[in-house]
Length: 328
Image (tube, rainbow, N blue to C red; front, side, top):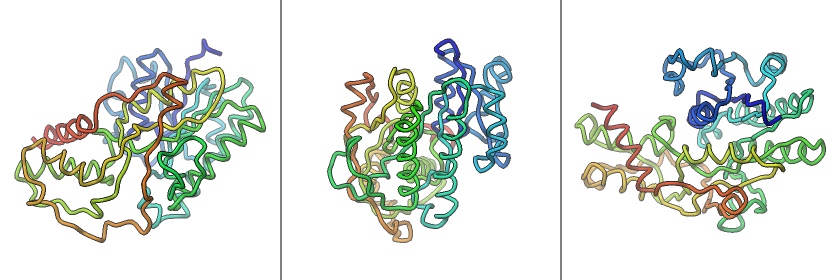
């Protein structure tokens, strides 16, 4: 099976999907991606690959399909016959999940079940990566969290991810399917969606520095997160599927920073005082915000030799500089 370097990625147009695609192409894979018909590929994060004729149609292929449509998904599987599946798709915004709980649970929970069933029916064994999330721990009973921390989700998104994560374990234990849960903590990059607070901050700071905006409106500045770089986290996903045995891994930096820290680091890049521009807006507060989510990367460091690269300040600088370049 090691000779077959064919990967299928759901959520290929997302932040993680685009970085993972680049990583796998570098490693000599043929990459297939499932794309929603409604996806605007012209503005997508893989447009630079789609426009590269040495890559597109040769080692990168896209297939239209919806995660709610089992028939189409089965057809894609039988056409592609992937050795590795990276399931990254699904509504990924925690705050938004309070507004659209039903579709969040459908997209995250039922879609994962559908894919696990299809993977189980494949003639050749497949390795399956499931994108779990630190939000499954929600109001965690311990800090830092490990692979053994009890699940206590605090949002519809967290509940749906907890359901999908447990299903992945059931399929691994009951059917011997090679399924790994990557329990990823917050990971950011210049390709982060604009509705995420880190990208919102980076963008506003760049636009304030260029005189295009006057203020940055934010919810709770004390919320703390364990923030890493998306480019590092996709390496962790790949490493999980290269092992002899499937397992679950927390992928985190082990450090927390507050939204205020992120704001201060971002304004420091452009040498401006944050107090002058930041306005507090309670409308952006979440109904329930997890207390202190910080992951212990001990297991993945020891077992797979994975290490996060770059510091928190490097990440913030990278995001702000990308926005400054875009604002010019």
